[in-house]
Image 1: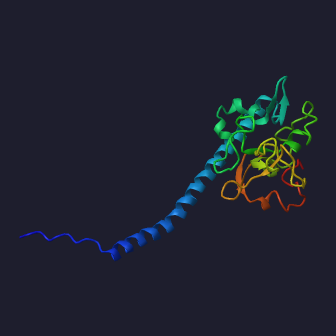
Image 2: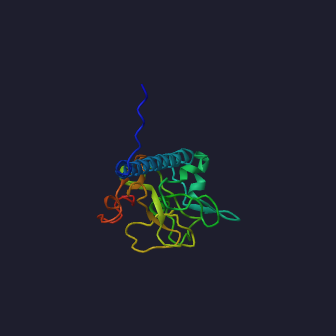
Image 3: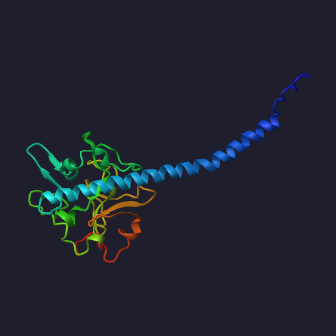
Length: 224
């Protein structure tokens, strides 16, 4: 008995199939996008956790003191992320996947996507005039280490700053001005800021829960 001939798709049937594929794509693409963003947020949180722990390792070698904001040499400056790098030995940890901040500064050196709460924690001045006399605090000096910010995802406070787009030195919430070479927390992980607190825990939070609209303004940044 001869086999039945295969029937070709009609134009209507092809259009229906294409429409179904388009609907499925419209449903699934946002899901994939959110899953990818969630993965980046998790990686950012993990990187900051490792970065923060390297601060504690540094403190174990330096009388429980935090690293300086920076210090000068005869030819250049050594920044806080360079100071703690021997405890990490992995500069990829300096970065927050999902951040729009460049991975290198204007000189071409690898930079960090995270900012250090340097003013209360190291005593550094806004103009860096006391670079040689700054005095980093101990890890136990804040009254509440679980409510004192040490590091956050960050970006420059000034667009097109001559220091680059990173925000490695954090401005305080009460400082209602922007400044070259200073940054503010960056909600780079699913629209939330990744924070490493002095006691060692890491959390993603909205700006309004720790940085803006707080009373007092520097509630989570000062030592009290």
